[in-house]
Image (tube, rainbow, N blue to C red; front, side, top):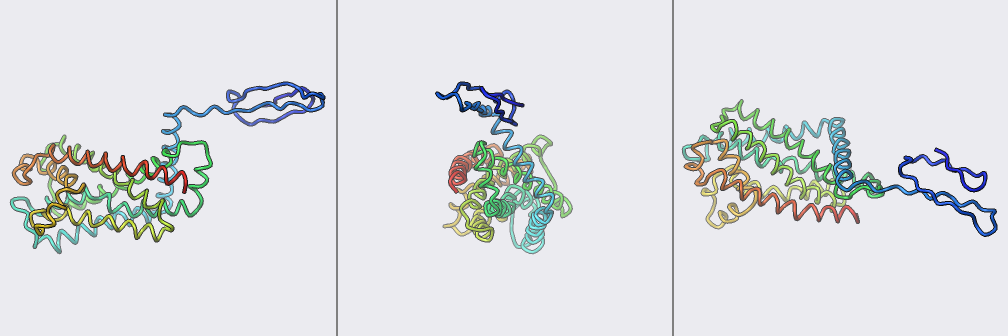
Length: 303
């Protein structure tokens, strides 16, 4: 599009015509042309956030596809933990009337975000070191949308790990005892928990000085998995450790998925209903996002 000023000078403006506004006039001596003022209206807030998040999520997923080692390592990690606990430690862990494999697989499924978290932290740190995040900060896009896109892409990796865990679980003797609706609810809760836990790891990647440091920081989250009901009943832990295990986010998350998988026998086996666990787990998920999303956004804005 060509914008003509008061003399023969022209300006080529390669921006959408809807975004142009004119300002005309001449200087006091009439020799200088007054250039047109070009303004671009900011995108609608909701559209801007959703569009930017979708674009960045797509970019990250394409990166995963081009580097399949990330996908393979995530699947192998889930498989390794499952096989070790199923066949090495399983015979020594008492779970009452519930078989250990039926006790274990829901725990691994619910806590799967922790195993995908290392990749999330390292990926964010790598993007930061490469200058990608600096370029994204220079664009007129919502800061939180870039991180939302990263969270969405990492949640897809959580879903991949969940698929591996459940598939291998069925191959090693795991069986669902709940209804189809309970099964769908269990899968949905796993994804909710996985999405919530991407945020602490995104924050770790932003504060880490390098990808290696991000990997080290991410291992700090692993005690939350082991000091929980994911692998062993809380009652089997030392007395001083039981309150810690019961009042941290992983235990109610695991309990909700396990109760849905066990169906009618859940309350007798676990002491509470699936709804009792789920309410507490969802509250924990909201708290985690409410803390780490703003922290990550602020860190990204000034990193």
